[in-house]
Amino acid sequence: MALATNNSSNKAADAPAITIAGLEKRFANGVEALRGVDLTIEPGSFVAILGPSGAGKSTLLRCINGLETPSRGSVAVRGLAVEKGNLRAIRTEVAMVFQSFNLVGRLNVMANILCGRLGKRSTLGSLLYLMRPEDRTIAEHALARVGLTERAWERADRLSGGQQQRVGIARALAQEPVIMLADEPVASLDPATSEEILDLLREIQERDGITMVVSLHQVEYARRYADRVIGLNDGRIVYDGGVAGLTDDVLAAIYHRSGNDDEAGLSDR
Amino acid sequence: MKRAFPTASGWPPLPVMGAALAVIVLLAAAAPLADVRPIHLLVSLGRLGAFLANFLVTPEWSYVGHVLEKLLETVEMAFLGTLIAAVLSLPIGILAARNASPHPAISHALRGLLTLVRSLPELMWALVFVSAVGLGPLPGVVALGFVTVGFLGKFLAESIEAVPDRAVEGVQAHGANRMQVRFFALLPNAWPDFIAVLFYVFDHNVRAATILGLVGAGGLGYDMTMAMRLFRYERLILIVLAIYLAVTILDRLSDRLRARVI
Image 1 (cartoon, rainbow over the protein chains, first blue to last red):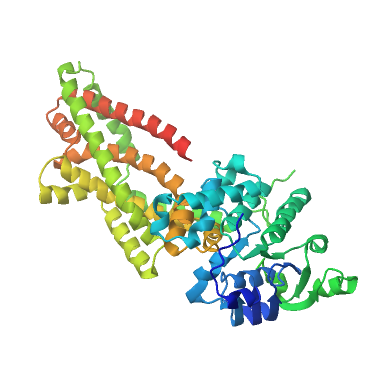
Image 2: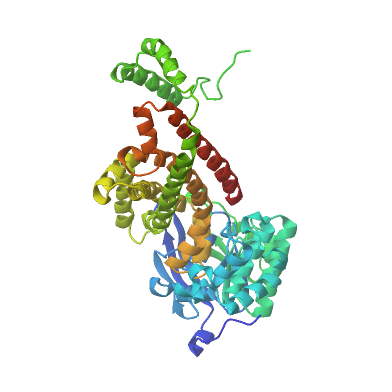
């Protein structure tokens, strides 16, 4: 499949895929999910984010495509700041894969994948669910890549968890993104299916050159699939480096729990 | 062995006991107000029997043609009223849903309007429209449509609000704008419930349409009241049977269609 149409300027091509500076996020209920994160992610890499529940993994990812608004600090995607005014522009470059798939259960698989094209089409251009033939072709290619061509016309909520996640990935692919964020994409799947999904993400990263940022619960998967690991604990980066550096001490630091803190009250955000 | 409720104390939950007590107290207070006299009811059974005996007549078979014609008119009124209301309630329901409305004030205002429309029964609206557009089925259709918009708009708004945020987020994260989120995430998930309730509402409207004739708003109701006032039981029994049959058939039909949609 063709890569994202490269109509952006040279500046965008030279800039890092993602630049995060001094990022802080405090939720309305007082929970501090991120306490100052600085991070630069190079184009085309496979980055795994590790950390205990409530460390801020999801919040970090959600800040990158503007699903959460930072309390302080900045996020930029290919040199373009993630702000209210250009959310749509950002989101057409950044695809997202979710832990609970976030499909529209009552639409069929094809319609769900075509949702990936919405960012590039106007309201009129998608009126009455009439989509352009080229969008349909892109969606069919995406579906073929995740191996679900024969399920195209079934309702999305009739598929198994692994299959729904494949549809989620196909939807992300159909978007022809530059960056793909995956928020614990295998947390609700069994080990065999998890490996299939991660193989698929790795293959997409290698073949299409899409920058892949994946938050994970299993250190084992991070070791096997990632080029670089970011260790988050209590809203701060405690490790940033290669897979080889994941020693027992480092893992202890990443998964360290400070008993008096509010992380126990945090959900998956 | 001593039996106990599955609560910490072994007693029924306090709210349940409180609610039961409240119902008993309210019942005791309400009975005299509503003039409920069970003895009187029992004594009246004889007269009820006498009235029902009036139906033991030979139906006026030549009247069947007229009844069927009026029945068709009644069903058509309900159908039109429901259809018009369904179309109107789509935009209204979207605007009234908190998670799809452009502004909270709009959804609040629309909710209030829908409640107002719904608070008066069809018969009252029919009276209003009969005096506005004259006798005939038209004011009946408008009255039915009015109340049905009040109900369907509220229902659609609520089923849109019940759509899980996850589906919305999934579509949003891919760059969909607000309008596209409505069409691709909110409506598809709210649709099936809306259509299911549409059948139910149609059912209800057929029954409501039979009574609108009472105020001259078309349908079988006019003939029913006339037959009752003039003691034409040989006609009344045909009308009652026709309504019963129509409602039963539609009920079965809508049950089947509903099962397919959900």
